[in-house]
Length: 75
Image (cartoon, rainbow, N blue to C red; front, side, top):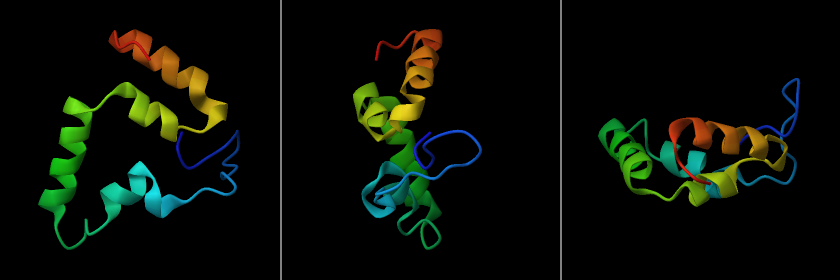
């Protein structure tokens, strides 16, 4: 939902992976898996849903909102 922009694996254009949430999570993950794990856990437990929603491709935003409703999280 972050890397792609449509069906059949259509990648997002003009997308800066390095500054995205995924890029930040993967920075140094090979060298320090504990840091990568801790940053993901902190994001999931403490972050606002808006932070993740802003990273999701517009194509998938409706799915993100549905998922939030299923979990009882307002987006």
